[in-house]
Amino acid sequence: MIADSKKEYKIGVLAVLSCQTIWGFLPIYWQALKPIDSGIIILYRIVTMFIYCYIGARFKYSRKEIFEPLRDKAIRRKCFTAGLILTANWSLYIWAINSGRVIQASIGYYIEPIVICLFGIILFHEKLTKYNAAAMVMALIAILVILFHFRQLPGVALGLALSWATYSAIKKTSDKPVMICLVYETMIYAVIALVAIIVLEAGGRGALAVAEPGKYALLMLTGLVTCVPIGLFGVCATRVSLFLIGLTQYISPTITLIIGIFLFKEPIDIVQIIAFVIVWIGLVFFTIGEFRENK
Image 1 (tube, rainbow, N blue to C red):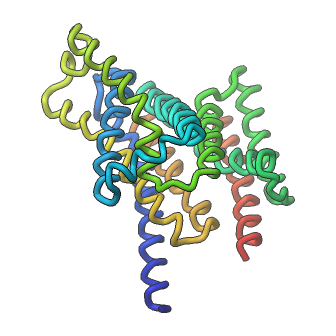
Image 2: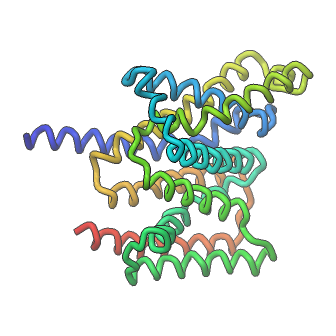
């Protein structure tokens, strides 16, 4: 029994590390799809995501098991709302990566766990600790530093953090398997996206007009590269502690930040570095608090 538990734990650790690493390196994949427009990439991602998720769900569940719960109006409403928010998050992320805002995207995913924590306190009456409060204050200070320096809100970072935190809050009340939920969350938007793709391609304004065959084949994998890390996240969620999941989720934005600076040569100034340092101080407080709570 102990051996089985250790094996499950090792599988969970491997899954969470793989998931965060894949997410961290994904900007390279999105950049490789240029010169395909970000909007077209988003449309293909929605359609192929539904296809891959449905195929994945069918390996484990019957067609009836997948679609029977949709008779419940509350489930339909919740899943379609979650799908809209998830689509907005994906769209903003891809646009940010392909428009030279990789660093700001990484900021968004650094402050995301703090925003999720704030939502937990407000919406689910979770306990506010001094460590969480310190982390939130640090994140707010970092945002204010950027605001006063650039005279504008870090819109991409806040948009990514808020949309994913909202999606997480909705998912917290869901008891359906991950893959089935993703089928629900993408099915309506996949139909809309497919119609848009057909119209664009027929008018010579789609991916086929600008992409080589190899790049178009790469485009068809957008759903798979989305589906795989989410599936890995589902595997780790039931096998390792929330503390470990929370701690490892800083791997992804750190990899993205390094890619943005050294591979894509995005400019970063002293004020952005200061903002990052402030956020990291907040993350230290947050991690200490999660560790104590986990003990």
